[in-house]
Structure formats: structure tokens, C-alpha cells
Image (tube, rainbow, N blue to C red; front, top):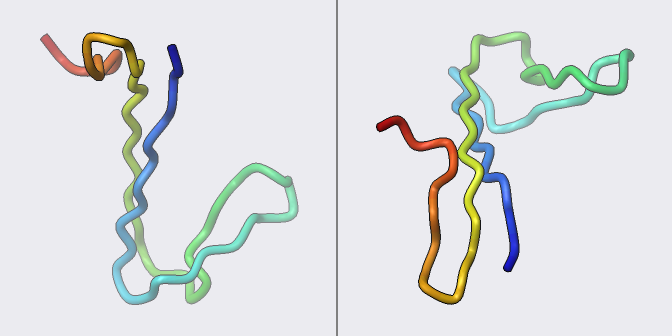
Length: 55
């Protein structure tokens, strides 16, 4: 199998991001607000399983 993370970003006024000096934090290029979410998905022979889905 395979496990992947899908991590979309939703930014208020731009489509550009950059990595902050700490090497981890992502920020919008123009300083506008943004939101981030993530799902971890296992790809199996029987189909995908969303591991982070709420019950």
C-alpha cells in the first residue's frame, strides 16, 4: 500500500507562499490570512481509506 497526505492551503488574496526562516512555517507571500487542512489517506487494493476522517 501507500500512504499520502493531502494538504491544501486556502489564502485570502494570493496564491503564493514561502517558507519562513525557521525552515518549517509556511506564510502567504503578501502577509494575508490563510487556512490549512490535511487528510492522510491509505491507498489499498480495496480502495482509499481516509485515516483522518471524523467518525
